[in-house]
Image (tube, rainbow, N blue to C red; front, side, top):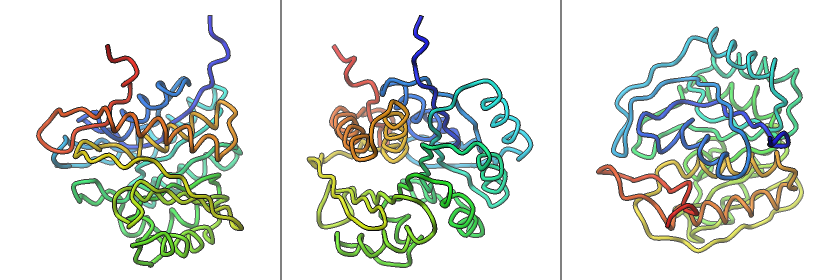
Length: 266
């Protein structure tokens, strides 16, 4: 019996298409060697082409899920994804604060890959003031970093300026995920308040990238829970994500998902 498996919690929305959200988080965490638990904040109706509807769960059931997990498990890390509203952010922050989670990774999910808004405007301020100060790491993509910082990002220099603004909201580290949207493709930028560190990987031309942000943040959280230092956790997760994208799945009729268990392929 394996009693040393680290237990990691994801707090996020559900993706009926299985490529992003809670489903991607659980797959990525499992693939990175931890036991995944979940708190569902919203149910989305989505596939590889679009998000058609979102139902936010009552804050009472969100709170009950968080209490149930912390009452019974030794939580070694928490990844936060889609929270959708200020009320949800408030209850999550209020219940996490006394837990003093060392490995708290916040992925500020604001918009779907297909352009559907996933965070209400009033919630952005709540995210910055209530959750970011609790976070070891915040992992916005370029769109999210632009929205959070008010800075247009087209280069690494722009990303550095945006990272400083986001770090000012109180998180300990900011990782801006460059993806394909800046001139230095496949490049991510980490800022700790003093120094910058750049993570590079081969850029893979593929439309099948649904869920990459969720997958990356979850893999980082899993590696942190297993005891890796932050830079090593990010590099290990980035290597994993690169291969998951390289082996992406051409399923559905839109942006197919990454292949979380590519290493099991025959």
